[in-house]
Image (cartoon, rainbow, N blue to C red; front, top):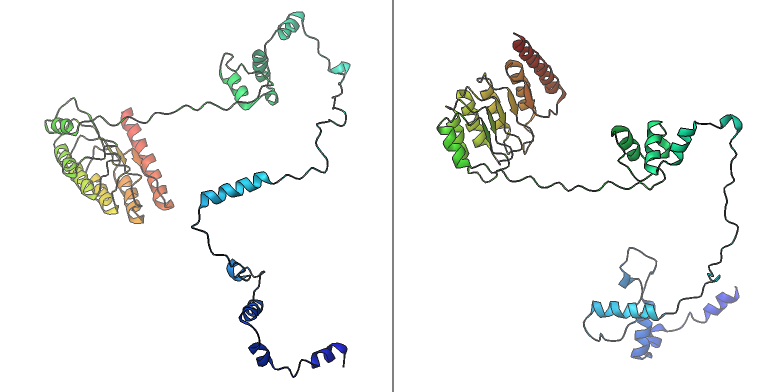
Amino acid sequence: MSSYQKELEKYRDIDEDEILRTLSPEELEQLDCELQEMDPENMLLPAGLRQRDQTKKSPTGPLDRDALLQYLEQQALEVKERDDLVPFTGEKKGKPYIQPKREIPVQEQITLEPELEEALANATDAEMCDIAAILGMYTLMSNKQYYDAICSGEICNTEGISSVVQPDKYKPVPDEPPNPTNIEEILKSVRNNDKELEEVNLNNIQDIPIPKLTELCEAMKTNTYVRSFSLVATRSGDPIANAVADMLRENRSLQSLNIESNFISSTGLMAVLKAVRENATLTELRVDNQRQWPGDAVEMEMATVLEQCPSIVRFGYHFTQQGPRARAAQAMTRNNELRRQQKKR
């Protein structure tokens, strides 16, 4: 038996309960703190459970975050910075690099005429920049300097060859002015079949009531002078699309229809496409950028309409399926060729 085991033998017959009864409340509390199982390296435990609570002082008041930050900043400023191991003196060590002069071999030396030598000697940096661009020495300047010198017939870059490339100045683009069209006047002119009104442009007017647009489409049925009808970004939905479809079945003068950037669903687009088949004067139709994708069936119907309506030579829609896209491209090529042949006659 080793000495360590012998040392433990004397504690075998100790009565633990008797020892605990003789301990005072303070000693019991201290023993309880010692027996708490804490794991300071366990990252899965909250920070408050990784070690014993050793704070016995009661809180002095509510938390003041600004006062705490101010105290920490003050403490950081009062702490003395440690001295550098090697203090900085600003002394420069070593010798500065001097690029050796390269002597130009005799076979590489170029002799110019006295007039050219004088012109080059008196040329400014901007003129040298244009000369380098004309000679194709694009490595001596930036791309902007090179293309400015090539594309323009005059010196427009005065920065010189060795200048630092400056970014282009931002040119603010003003917002597009609101559409000044008066819907009441347009509706009155369409109803009266005004021959001076050839274009109805209601683009970006988003507060037009649905009944007013429906009345406008109803008046367009009998109008014979309007050639272009545009309802881009007017928040139009299926009711307006159905009104446009009814208008296309009766109108015989409209050539361009634009209903892009609206809330028309596949049902509304299908109604418009079916009405286009009954219209022989429409040459341009734009229905792209609706709020939701119309679906494969509508795209197949678009391709079919373009194949069956040779009068349409311009169609605005971005196909997502390869099959309808190929059919529509082939139909548009055929329609434009037929139009070209008709103009020749």
